Image (cartoon, rainbow, N blue to C red; front, side, top):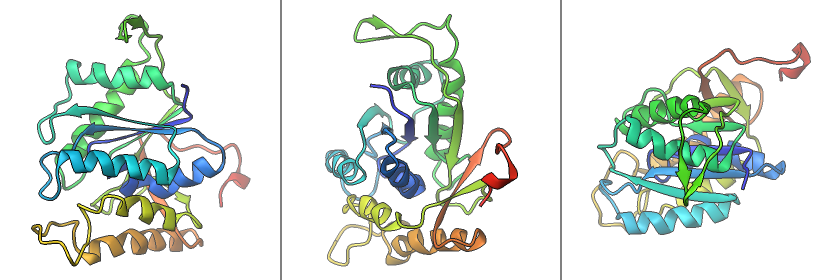
Length: 238
């Protein structure tokens, strides 16, 4: 299956938190979008890997994803090496996306910048025809996405561009709350974490609203890019 957009996240819920509204918007426009989670989030303080698996599947249904896979790398301990790059490259060549979304280039959680660099470098290596990979016994063709964008996560990084996501913030929040083990639940007796407070889940909306304020829309999501963002003409800007 060829996808238009393939989004990678170090943990289940990373993609939803960073780019859930953008993904919902692109799907509404007819784009085929998939998600690859690098780990099962097994070191998370709350819940378990098995619970996160179920929550990720539920979130995928909410967003209307065409595919979702998990590479089951070691949470907290995966590295950017040939072994891990090869597995990411297999996913890129399997789905042949035009656009790849990946973790923030800098962030509080150590897995986020690691995942960001791992996926970005794998996108380049995936285009090398002399590096061979096989999936289900079949030789894969080289494929390099046209664009790689990094969504913004915990840290308020300065975006290189923003996407107007007005009308899709509710879908984003719904997809995030599918991970009920991770986020605010006044009835939960599990330990508190930086993302389990009501303030954190509220921040999903107010941060998007603040970015929207800068571009004169109601809501927006921000991204970083490794190359200059370009437009075909001045009328392309909003």
